[in-house]
Amino acid sequence: MRVARTRAELAEALTPLTGSRGLVMTMGALHEGHLTLVRRAGELADHVVVAIYVNPLQFGPGEDFDAYPRTLEADLALLEPAGVDVVFAPSDAEVYPREPLVRIDPGPVARILEGRTRPGHFAGVLQVVHKVMNLTRPDFALFGRKDAQQLALVTTMVEDLDMGVRIVPVEIVRDDDGVARSSRNAYLSAGERVQARALSRALAAGAAAAAAGGPAASLAAARAVLDAADGVDLDYLVLVDPSTFTDLTVGAPVGLLAIAARVGPTRLIDNALVPFEGLP
Image (cartoon, rainbow, N blue to C red; front, side, top):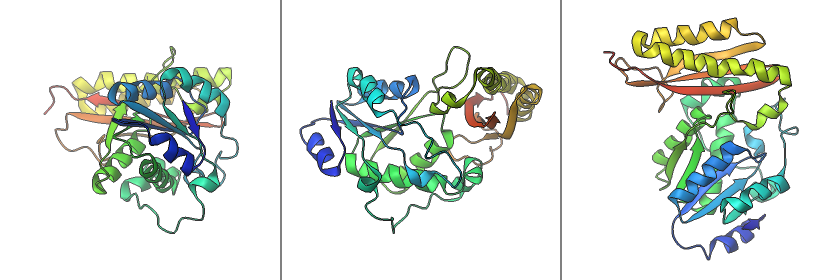
């Protein structure tokens, strides 16, 4: 496994790789969810490239950019036995030699839900995704379904800009208690961790209610769980089209039930695909 910290080192590391290439983009503090992406990339592609970079453009004022965990040595120790060929771990100066003058406009979907709470976040995400894809030239890029709005926007960007990369969604990885794996879970106290289980319980209730009662029943069942949960400060609970994050159309076969909430000081997101079986 080669570790590249500059563009030149990255180009040198990629040159001998023949065959297809899979890319996994992370901000480090790796966990089993990231390793699931890496393993799936290894199944699809001949070579796996992992980017580790905490991107300042996707953090707003007052967010946790400075506090975000940076654990590069531990991350590399996890990636070495996972079959990764190249790790790109650049500095800010390497990624952004100057303030970008040309920016990616992520469009209207970036201004709702997560985008409403975090203005400018998705513009920063797409900026770095576009840049790293250009530098690594993957055939496949793998993204977790947990960040569902990000997944939808990255997929749209790749399609609209004819980037020639296949975006592969990978299912959410959960701990035994149902909580979705996330680097931000490290901020939860033991008591807050118990409270955070309400998000996955709400999603399960919404999915169970959907097949018989449709979208309204799904939302009501999920909200009932969250309303009864201690320590959960709900930001939003929505049921949207999983591809566009717009309102569901009549007769849609599946929706995406998405939650954002604060548990203590930590903001968590979670979601589930909800089928509407047998409904008109």
